Length: 130
Length: 293
Image (cartoon, rainbow over all chains, first blue to last red; front, side):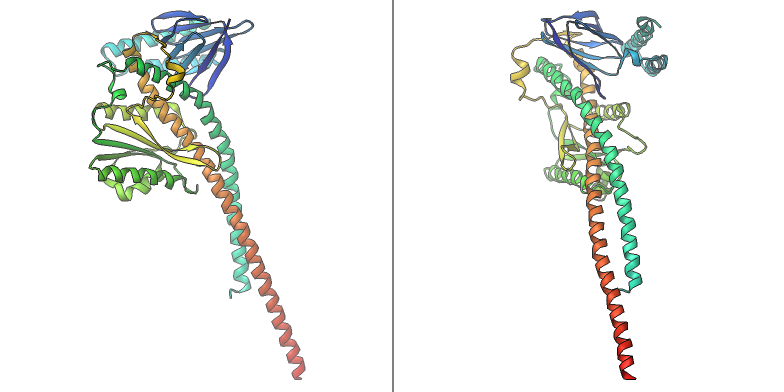
């Protein structure tokens, strides 16, 4: 049993395939969506979306965005997305710099959010094994 | 009757005009391909985005705390018209047809006694609107120096728009741009940006009693999602606009090249005729001169 997996960023569509399971880094925790999953919407934190089908595995680094899960579809609306092979050290550095720049001028709860994002962005390196 | 020399100069000048328009046409064709690709590859995202927003909006509808971007301010006194045009001319009626649409809307709104403010994107639109609506222009976004439409830059533009909405500077925002249909057809379009129109038409497809679980809850998701939805609307409209501009320029330059060709043909005929006339005249003079002897 499979479901339709789409991953799109504002500039382009990165994946549109059938998948058996999709790992999603949600803001409230990681989850795996499988066919017949209950309808769900969640926002994303910086992390890796992984879609597994019988013969392939797609890994995409996302910086944030949203996921819509229905029984038959998983649609990822990524803010920025790079397939794992595209992610060089340079890209990671750029993302980290951007997350750090976002701290400027923030206070209270939005500072907390920005700080958490920065930590999550930094954690990307470990997830990618660099 | 212009002299032979004048005609020759004229033909030369039209020929060089033709060369330029031909070159511009080819440049536009190359740029069009890129712009069209960008516009087409951005479409899936906006389609999905629209569907997600519609779902969320339905879930949040009726809640008192629903964001104002969705529900509106409850009045429609003041309007913001965002007019997106090109930075350059020589693209047929592309710029003026967008401006015309915006101008008609602005006049209607003013006649109804509403407050109208305008934000222009692209130099050409500003130039054309300045004459009539000078005092109403509140801002301008310069696209020059941007090779392609950059999402990051548009994000700032959209954030500014949302900011002034939150400060109550307007109740409704409408975006004017040109939708890219084919290379020769671009449709000037007015799109309501704020409040976000929640379409009822796709009810049969996605609604069907699907209840989503939200993580975090609806409100938090909406607060994050809506600015992005707006940004995306502006972004995709500008991409469409860029493709339309190149399409319009390409067909305008194609016409110009063809017209120049026709003109050259006509001028060449006139040139040959007057050359022949001059020769005949000289011959007659010689012959009659010889006879007089």
